[in-house]
Length: 183
Image (cartoon, rainbow, N blue to C red; front, top):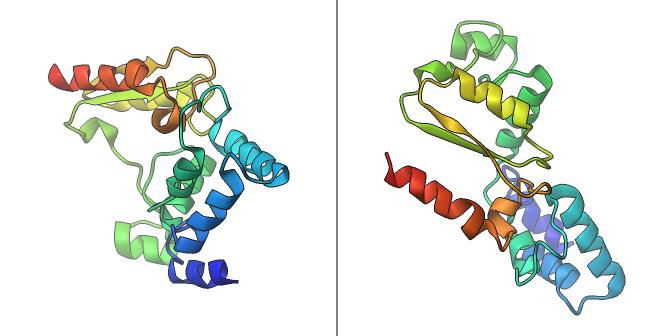
């Protein structure tokens, strides 16, 4: 009950990080949790984030899970889903009336990637359940300052590996820093 009351305070956040939420995740995901709870946590982390025991060796899974959604707004999530459905990189769809007020048209405008002047390097995993290699390549081709699409080497690389995979520093962080140093 306390978790629900605390979550009401964070209505604009997807699974806002409340004290009760952190405690719930800690009790569910820690190594000495009851087998049913621990298995539930492992299933959740595998289904949504692609995290498996071999990828998270030496990673504090309860800590990582308790902070995974922090700061993710429900509006950003809705916008992401909207763009998946429309297959367009576009502004938020407020509905025809509000779109006219905000954008001057009933539909949200597509973002003009060719107008972005900052260099963009795109990284994607072969097993990413949220972004495909094809979509990343398509967006990259539209960018005027494309530094390339870098496909992560492990076959099972997924979105959450950028944060939780113990091999991330060697596989990607050093590469990102190298690209930035060369700009």
